[in-house]
Structures are given as structure tokens and as C-alpha cells.
Amino acid sequence: MASELEKLRGDLEKLIGELYAGEHKILVHGEGRPGARVMLVGEAPGEQETLQQRPFVGKAGKNLDEFLALSGIDRAELYVSNAVKFRPTKLSAAGRVVNRPPNQEEVKLFLPWLKREIALVSPELVVSLGNVPLRALLGPGHVIGDVHGRFLEADGVRLYPMYHPASLIYNPALRPVYAEDIGRLADWLRAQK
Ligand code: URA
Image (cartoon, rainbow, N blue to C red; front, side):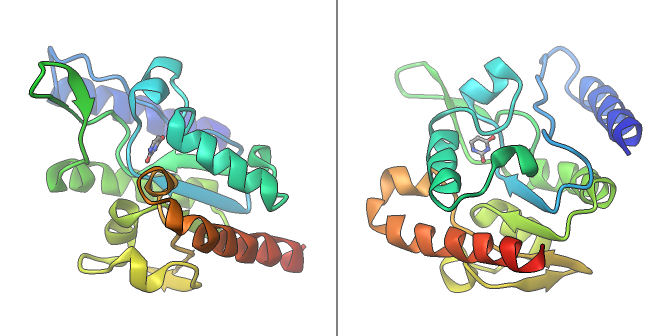
């Protein structure tokens, strides 16, 4: 599967290079081993992820790592990816390049590639982080506040939605909820071994 994933990444690089010719979009691909039991799917890479070419290595990634460590989950055992593989940006009022949430077209463009990536990694459980991957995989209209911490099914894929780890930065009151959801995930992992 490793070489099929490499081929998928190569094909995606080619497509994005053609679609965004002249814009030099840098893609951040998924990280981890095919066959991982759990695949995390975030929203899109940010600045640090793009610089380091690895998902979840910036501020949100630090939150994620902290909670994974607390619940005894080894990140090296997971496959970590994003719904959109390049950093969506805009110019701030001050003229700086800043992150923005991916738009519908971007999510739609990457969705078939995400689905192929999921099929190749073939995890027992996909954990969506935040509303963007939740809606991409489960359908529009779903709200993370209603479905987080529940084991669902989306198109034959077992799905466990969690809040996005960046939401803990803006809303620290979510920390106990996040700890509970990730604890349930850790219990599930241990129970299935
Ligand atoms: N936020 C995401 O959704 N993904 C990343 O890789 C980093 C931050």
C-alpha cells in the first residue's frame, strides 16, 4: 500500500500543479503507516505544517499531542492527514498572509482523494477533527457539537468525530470534553486489541 499511497500523492501533486499553475501550492500529505488502526483527518495545514511538510506540527498539533499523550495514545501508531492538502490563505487587513478555513470548492476538490487515501490506509476508525472533515465525510449540515464523541458510520467507514484541537485555543472550556472524547477513543483502541 505504501507505493500506492505514493502514487496517489504523485497524481495529486500533478493535478494541483496543473490546476493552480503559477501559484506554487505546497501540499502536505498524510503521515503514518498504511494499515494504522486509526486515521485522524483534520481540516487543512497551516503555516508550520507547510514549512515542515508534516500535518499537525503547529499550535493545534501541540494541543493534539498533549491530549494523545494524556490518554496514552502513541501518535506514531496513527495515520494523520487533512481534508484539504494545501494551506488556505488570505491577506489580513494589515497585509499579512494568514490562514482561512478551506472553502467548499477546495473541500470538494480534495474529497475523492481523501476517500482514496482512506481506502488505501484502510483504518478501522476514521477520527474527524472539527466541522470541515465531519461535513466532508458525513454530509453537510452536521455539527460537531451534536455528534462529537460518538461512533458513527459514513459510507461504510467507521467515523468518530472530535472537536478540532485548535478549538481548545479559542475555547478552553472545551478541554474536559476533549479529554473525555479522546479517553473514549483510547478505551476503544485498548478494547479492540
Ligand atoms: N489544523 C489542521 O486541521 N490540520 C493541520 O495539519 C494543522 C492544523
